[in-house]
Length: 196
Image (cartoon, rainbow, N blue to C red; front, side, top):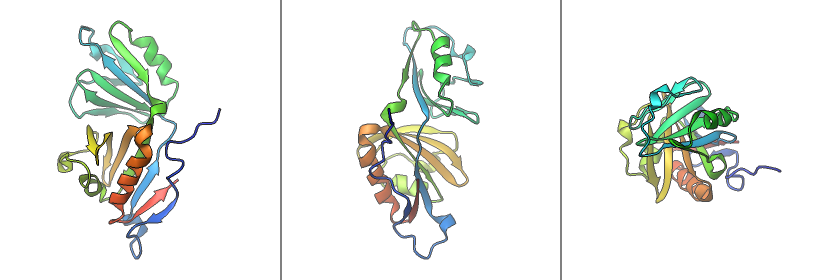
């Protein structure tokens, strides 16, 4: 079976918007990220199990708002109280997670197939996001994550870096194309390079 990317019909390589006469280094870079493991981990409200003893790829779950813990291959985003989103390059990590999390205390769901992922990098990333999202991006730092909406479409943001700004945006696959158009339209003013 062949996997078709969520943005296969809309994402194409090239330079767009106000890019003429600008140094290519100063353009926003927009790309689609594929082939990541995305798992939602939720601890049941009645569970008394301590998450401090859980180790996922060398990382401990932390129940701290906006917090992202990470290593080279895996990022764990705080998604709400006792709720995390695990993003990893290691697809086989899911088997390990399913073995270590008791069904009586946790719900673990593989949602890899249900998300479109857009990565944006450049000095104007926050300005693009401000155009359609009510969050105060001036307070967003490296290794923070938020859930919000952009032009009415719900998304999760993972701040990968802040020198220069680099974010990953996760949106439901069915809204992927609309979300992509909203993000790229907001980026036209700054000029962007779309990377395949």
